[in-house]
Image 1 (cartoon, rainbow over the protein chains, first blue to last red):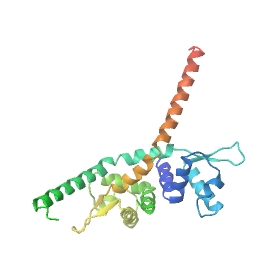
Image 2 (cartoon, helix red, strand yellow):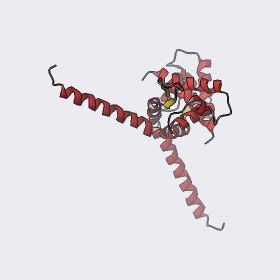
Image 3 (cartoon, rainbow over the protein chains, first blue to last red):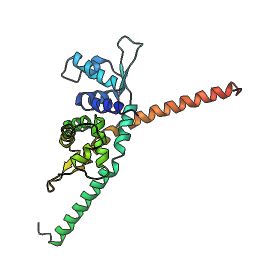
Image 4 (spheres, rainbow over the protein chains, first blue to last red):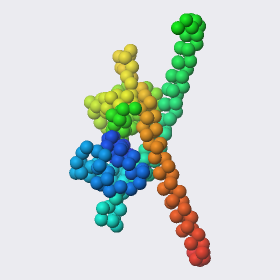
Amino acid sequence: MAPDRLDLTFAALADPTRRAILARLAAGEASVTALAEPFAISLPAISKHLKVLERAGLIGRSRDAQRRPCRLQASPLKDAAQWLEQYRGFWEESFDRLAHYLGELQRKGAGHGDDG
Amino acid sequence: MAPDRLDLTFAALADPTRRAILARLAAGEASVTALAEPFAISLPAISKHLKVLERAGLIGRSRDAQRRPCRLQASPLKDAAQWLEQYRGFWEESFDRLAHYLGELQRKGAGHGDDG
């Protein structure tokens, strides 16, 4: 897995419009016009976002039809998820610590009586 | 979960040096000088990367010590992983399709005899 591939993937995901486009394509392929509809931005702006997604390999365009619908290509998301997975131990650990802390607070609260 | 939080996280991850810094911090907290060591870039450049990571909440700096070591804060990674998780069905499906395709190829190969 070349590092620049992950660069492109994460950079493409760092925008709410592009994430919304991927969410829309998860429901099925769509034309550029259909993709632009829910957003208050111009067609050229949408096209720019689509180019970023296409460069990252997150979407593909059909060649056959004239309207060239876009479809989701999820494999770069898998690589990004695998990269993040290395850190699972850390976020679970901090959750464990928080749970322990809340447990301690609760025990202390119970010790001081429940007059609330 | 505010969308701009994910923007900051994904943008922070879209750089190989910043990902390498996180990997180093996964082994324990480290000073800026120690973090800079393995990279052929200046201390100011490292500081810039650290600011991006800090703004995304991916690292924290101790206030007590003079050298203010950095430490990993993994919770934004959890949110990013959860966002990606929505698409797991898609990348598993494409893997299934590939496996099916390879199985078909193998069966066809077997049908034509094994004279190789």
